[in-house]
Length: 167
Image (cartoon, rainbow, N blue to C red):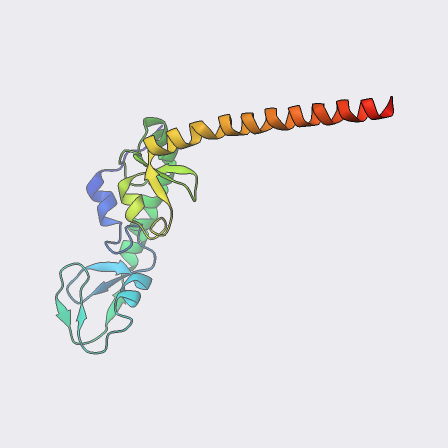
């Protein structure tokens, strides 16, 4: 059975910086939550003012505290999302974001949604619309077939030449 997660539950378990389920979530002074790595990277080169990546409120110190409860919720939600992955793929929807699979990641050789495209995982990858990938990959077998036919003809001609030399 496919497990469908309400969008808002999934949103609550997703970091607004990396768009992935929280990994080692921390809370900052305004109450917003981020992956520890995301907020650390966001504040990396700052020395005085530390803005919240979500609401832009500025803080004077680089302080955050672990949010263990959110870590547990994110883990549970990600497990449900994994269980629903098979059914979602059959529906033509992204298992993580429940969005239509409109793009194709050439690096991972799989269809992805627009939210996945913006995520850290796919940002550096070559991504094209699925229709474009479909057309592009339809041509590949024809090119291989032509190449094989040409190779077969060359081999056949070479064998005939060698047979004539032996006679």
